[in-house]
Image (cartoon, rainbow, N blue to C red):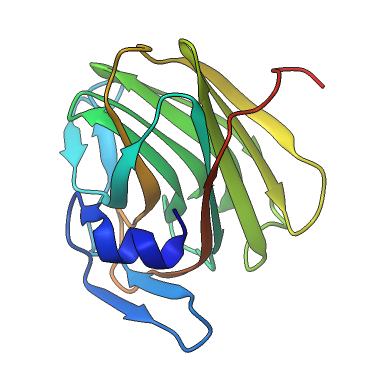
Length: 195
């Protein structure tokens, strides 16, 4: 799967405000104000309105999503999305939180959890997030430009689950967020958790 085949054969979990394919093949996705993905924990609400363009993914595989996020407002976000159901999913990428770009992941098994680490110099640069599925684990890694991969998260996912995966963005607090997605790659899973 590449970006073009995802556009042709994938499905949106929630339609974005606008989608444009650029001459260079990149995809510009404009989020709807109030879009988000979250279930219960701490905030007490359920949001199932993220803009995820997803397609079926084999259980022993890895997906990489590359994008440029020029986010500036609270919770502007983009990255990779893996979905089993409305109550079981993983999103990982870059999100603006309290004025700082954060590299993080939300893992949801009925209720969401969230882990973040600051990456203030990643906005406006090409970020690649990789989710590798093998056995009962999803291993999430990320990098900016051609820098080394960083381990973001190891999370449980039922090895028998049917998974759809692809790109996503959301703008919980404002209108007008547009994310440039530059690539989607599907390939074999990581050889090991540790190099």
